[in-house]
Image 1 (tube, rainbow, N blue to C red):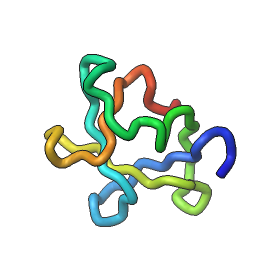
Image 2: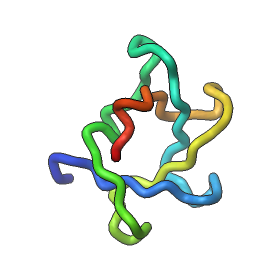
Image 3: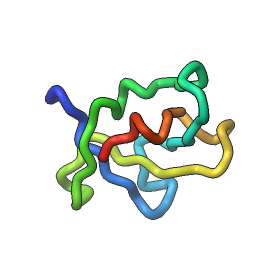
Image 4: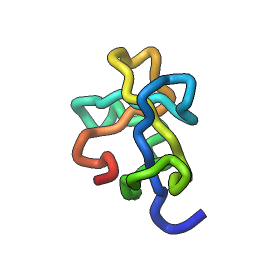
Length: 71
């Protein structure tokens, strides 16, 4: 894998490799190294990792601060 993960946000959870939840404090982060550092890509075929944003922390495999999420 390259130095920066290529991340794509999918529209449906079943399309995702990982589910992401945004946390408020750095000590709450979990598995963030999978996508950070990273860069958002425009198309799913360009992505190393496909993610879906969830509403609840218990649904997530990755918990990350908004500032650390790929741009």
